[in-house]
Length: 256
Image (cartoon, rainbow, N blue to C red; front, side):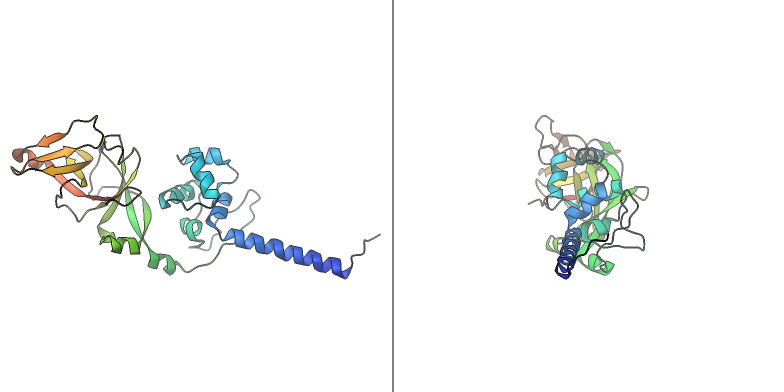
């Protein structure tokens, strides 16, 4: 025998259903929710290991902490989800942003791509390491990814997006300022040596990130922040070996 449901009970069920749907829709608009759905079915620990970040970092993102864009890009690459959808809910194509284990398509907020382009500039990240690595900024340099920087910040720092490049640090010679695998933003237009600032330089086939100090006689000292490394001095007749690639302007934080 079918169970009779009072009108008041039916209205209550409908109300609860609407309330549940609203909670889901509001939650899906958050970065934390999109990250949570993207990493499934992996555990937090296993996914963090895959993208080489700490489990604590990923947990804080899932609790609502704003992450670095470089971390979000790692998540998007590993989870194979749309980068713009992950950071802002922007879907750039007709394909679903992601599907769950049962292949059910999830909707995402539709926002014009122009909104992202107005707010962010995409800076090329090259498959180049500095400090202990080999490589050069030339036509053969391979772009590995693009990192998004706010245009307002670039304007504030008087930086031109088409003169910037992202590279990656290797080694510990510049610790504690630059750590191994740190992302480095380089202004390729600024090659004028200023006292004590950090530059990406090339000597022969080697790329380094070093502080530079110039003396009255024209010689240049290459300074490592890690005092376990001995400073190097290039005399005036050796300066033809030195090429300044550009000034380091960002290492996950602004440089004064």
